[in-house]
Image (cartoon, rainbow over all chains, first blue to last red; front, side, top):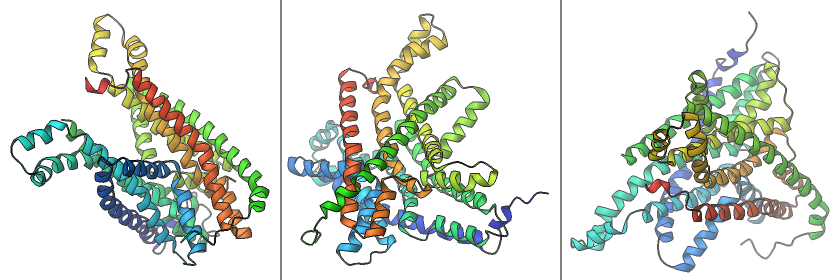
Length: 225
Length: 230
């Protein structure tokens, strides 16, 4: 039988190493997502407010984030900050900063649209029942907002995870880098390693993102009923 | 802070501006091929899904899930480094275009589907009751209304795909990121290189962003896109 080269996955701890590498990207994604959700909730509330100047500033921030590719932002922080602050920012830190910056804008916009999608009569009915402002928000507005927010927030998580794959380009040792090391190590005895390693990484990402995006669409369907 | 110690070397910027122009040209060209290809693939996939063609339907479904749930950069690595091991050697250029079409196709398919879903069922039923065939209904009733609704999503996808091209430097395409990294590495002109990078992307993306929001407004004024409320 012809040598397929698939054994590269099972040599030593190669597969385990790949998984560990994947975990590094996922960790970056999850940390950034956590910050983004917290800051995004605040930003969304601010954006749904009435102050025109603040609204305008938020709009500008949102547009900048929407227009600039995330990789450009990564370069700006990673190379720019290293030069100006003399600080040797690690790739990981730069990634968390950038993805939080990006995620906060996206999350803020989601929160804003969820907030303004609550019909006005919900507020009015609440008040007419004699609820205080706090009661109104805690018991009526917030639960509905969260319900509407959840599918798109979960969807943002998959986008975040997909975006963290960029960190290999600023030198973070994650799944792709580990894959490259394995390929380089077995260059002579297994020339087909690249196919299997990159194929595996491809499927690993799929295995992570697919369930999350299924969850997101399931939540969305439940919302529609 | 960022401020005072930043002194730009304008001579340097002028000298290397041409490199950025060339790189931007490459980005635009590949984006254009990619977007046109993605549009075609998306349309075909959407038709297959909508007409429920037996085996193809499953394949399209799988393709959409696979492409939407993996990052472009991983797809590119697989194409560029993995495929040659199966005897399929692709240049970085064709890798970029194929990768972009693979990614964009599913997003475009979803954009069309959103449009079709937004056409109320009444429209379909009315067409049938007028004696139209399935094909006539689809081509004359559903598609025109769906396209109008899909336009905003389509525009968002175009911007998304152009932004995604920024990872092409990973497969050795001399795009904007590649040139920037080169200049930083060679001359340590970090500020100048980064500034020109940002300006280049602004020049490419700002007009497209404005045009797309203009189109979005037009579509809304045309009275389309409100069908969801029915």
